[in-house]
Structure formats: structure tokens, C-alpha cells
Image (tube, rainbow, N blue to C red; front, top):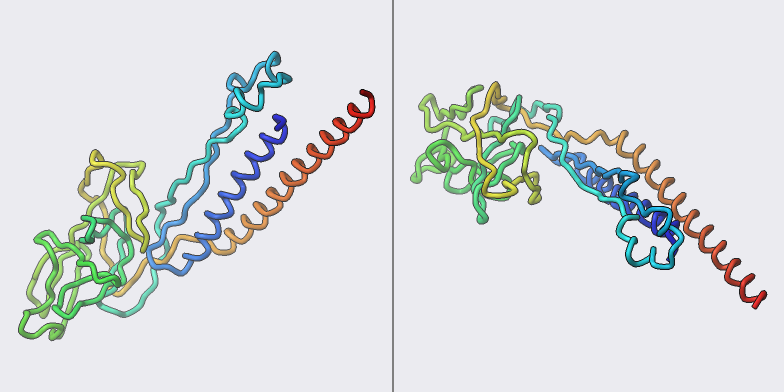
Amino acid sequence: MSGEIYMAAAGALAYEKRLQIISNNLANSNTVGYKQDHGQFRILNLSELPDESTQNSADVSTSQADLFWNQFNVYTDHTSGSLKNTGNDLDLALVGKGFFCVQTPDGIHYTRKGDFTLNENGVLVTRNGWPVMGESGEISVDSEENPNQYKKFSVDEQGNVTVDGDEVDSLRLVDFPQPYKLTKVGEALFKATDSGTSEIQTEDVRVSQGFIELSNVDAVKMMTEMIEVLRGYESYQKIIRSVDEVNSRAINEIGKMT
């Protein structure tokens, strides 16, 4: 395969990955607390490209092939989404940097998805049934004898949880050094990329009760990007076809001459 086709194929593959990212963002545009992803290319330096002595070599398709492929990375945009007033006391949103802590079967995970509820034991949980962690562990809203029997559940801006006027716990709110070394695990949850990623104390973060943080996806912008990506992908396809046709004609002409 010629170097031109390698380069065009690398571009087409990168655009295909961008399309997958955009499609996933659009699919989660209405997911509470979702953070959109972006694709990032690594631009090759001229010094990394084959020199003139090897550009026309027959070995370029094997020994130099890796130099024609772009390095493509995906990163998450952690900017805050807009807040929506729901009027539900169990809905909580964070204003500022930070995450709620959630106890999952795989350990502590982190989220901005604050559409919480109570399980049958009166424990504050996510929609998947995983406990939301407080400074003292799971947050139990009421007694085991009378689960879900309370008159007033409130959370102040500092995350202190009170039930019928009695403080029961404080939300465990954490942050991480920038840039975030967090990995998505689905359901708007994140986990630390490695054991060296340590939690730090949140600063200037407030809890808004009765609100949820919406996705930070701009659906209109995503649709525009999708159209751009589709056109770019088609352009690379045309380049591949054109180069292939030129190569085919060249082979045929050489065959006629011999």
C-alpha cells in the first residue's frame, strides 16, 4: 500500500473515531450529570516523517508505515452543565468543582449526577441503588423501623444533611488535581485512573438542593460537528479511491509496455 493511501486511511480512521464520540455525546445529551468527550489528534513533526531517501522506497509500506498513523486520544470535558430546578428534595447539584462519592461493587466512584432517591431501608442512593457516601458512611435518612417516614429532608450549601431538624451526616464531597485523571465507567460515574490519583478537599463548592446538573453537551454544536466529520470522512474516501485508480492505471500502462 502506498504512503498516500496510508495517510488518507489514517485521517479517515481518526474521523471515524470522532464520529463515534459525537454520536455518544448526542445519545447522552439528556443524561443528568453527563460530561462530553472530545477527540484529540497528535500532530506529527516533520522530523518524524520518512526522509527523502525512504519516501519512494519499496520498504515504506512496512518499515515506515507507523509514521503515517495519527495518534488519537480522547479526553473528557468536565465543565459544568446548566442547573434545572426540579423541586425534588432528593435532587442535588454541585456548584463549583467537585464530585459526590458513591459506593459501588467496584469501590468508590465519583459523579456529578445528583438525581438521588431512597431505597427500601431509607438510605440515600443513586438510581442504580448504590449508596451515596457521607463523611460517616452511608447516609440513612430515617430509622430502620420506619423507613422513608420523615417530614423534612434538607441539605444546606455545605452538604450537611438534616432530617426533621436533626443533622444526620454531611455529604462526602471530593475533588482531584487538574487535569483530572479519571476514567468513565458508565452511568455518569468516574473512577480514579490509577492508585496514585488521590482525593483532595473541595474548595468553593456549594450544594443546591432541588436542582440537578444537566449534561454539558450542546446538541446543536454536536450536530454541526457531525456534519463536518461526515464530509471530512467522505473526502478521505475520495482520496483513497483516486490514489487507487492512479495506481491501477500505472500498473496497466507498465504491463502494456513490457
